Image 1 (cartoon, rainbow, N blue to C red):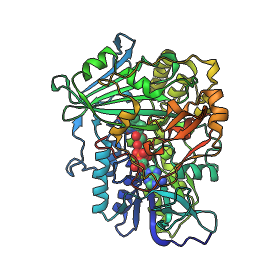
Image 2: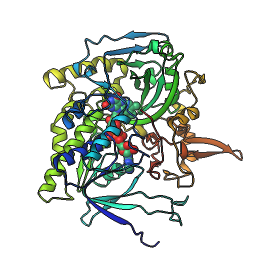
Image 3: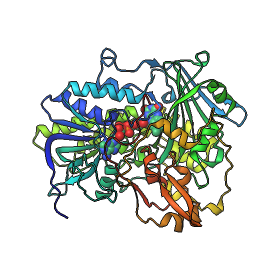
Image 4: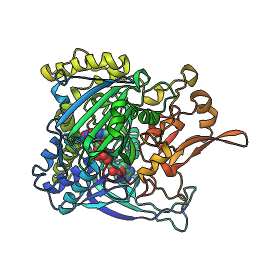
Length: 549
Ligand SMILES: Cc1cc2nc3c(=O)[nH]c(=O)nc-3n(C[C@H](O)[C@H](O)[C@H](O)COP(=O)(O)OP(=O)(O)OC[C@H]3O[C@@H](n4cnc5c(N)ncnc54)[C@H](O)[C@@H]3O)c2cc1C
């Protein structure tokens, strides 16, 4: 094939992903030096289109970045007023008192926000400072320099033929080069995955862990709406099948975020995370809240859960991993946005200092140090044992011991357990179907619960059908030859968007990939027990179009 010719653009810093991490980095770079050339590339059709957080935002990241965010009109309109935690049984609930919880679990002083809207506002701030932001631009490849460093990305490839080849309508995209490239792609970033493997950045660290988070926005009866209320639940319907839990956040305009997270280290391949979420809404406490309301949006996204011990090395020549590309979620708090912002700020400060001394294309080790020794490291270290305890000992023991561990870490800066390990990765945790019982899920009633495809239409996701399938199977036969007999092909169930199906054709099972439905959650890339599926970027602008998620 003839060499592909691409236009090249040169920047000081190239940033992949306009989430809180990437936008914070862009803002901080321009605050430090208005003359720096900074570009942010975002695969969503607009900034915020692919952002899905809950979200209760700890404003510490924003305070550090833009101290006068209030005066500047940041959309943090709903302060948390009430914070509830419940343990659910099938027919009832027990309120867990707030008092024994360590202070880090307290949500007072935090805000219920649409992170999509916060990112839209941050993008405006960045643009006012002179940052170039290009939405609708997927970064599909890394560009390496002569010394093996990352020197840029390829973005904006459009119109590939169905088989991935170049055709008459193909636009080859551009190469964007930078003295440094920041990968702020969020959880399980596709370029970040390549960088972690190429430079062996996970060496000496624990495996990364994940959950799949699903979320709906509901408009509810104003009489039941309590703006500023945050509710978390654990227990039913998951019980011993899997770890996870729910969140219910009352934001403005009689809207409520209803979300559910299932830890992806579950063993039983018959488990159907999406149906667990739908079933959860029939709990009497939840059903009573939602009755008479309507679901107005749906989405899903994986969430990193490995925390402190799983964060890879954050830098390699020319490149740095920011936010959830490196996994900076504080699991018991279900919060990562504050750390994403703080990491963007630290990466920007390190790159600025390096560029001042004519450095480029090397390792920003100052960034690594700032994250591990600074506020992010401290935040994650205190809670590092919560997730491994839950995986090893189940919900109730881990609640008690995890609580104790968070207290000793908070009060004395130490843990009686040291740093526990996570064990297997999530793909390896899946056991053979024959070892587990099938689970009988009730049919969605169309009022409180919905079938998957109907719900996916509320994510407004869209992919040009003529492009190559962005969900690549290393071995196209494996889903039927191995995954079906061994694991009852769990892709049919773990995907929250109904992308994967096993259908019968001419009396034989056939694996179908409806990539048009994909909401870019990345669960398949994480959970496929054979690690046969690789999520790659579809062309820019495709994917979900979340409103105020
Ligand atoms: C269900 C759920 C609930 C959560 N609740 C909360 C909460 O209440 N509070 C909280 O603080 N945190 C919460 N989190 C965690 C939070 O979402 C993450 O910590 C945060 O989003 C990380 O920010 P980020 O900038 O690293 O990545 P993201 O927010 O994921 O942003 C990454 C951006 O990069 C873009 N992108 C990715 N790859 C490419 C590419 N190759 N080319 C171009 N663009 C690309 C994406 O489209 C996206 O816009 C929740 C997460 C989930 C899944």
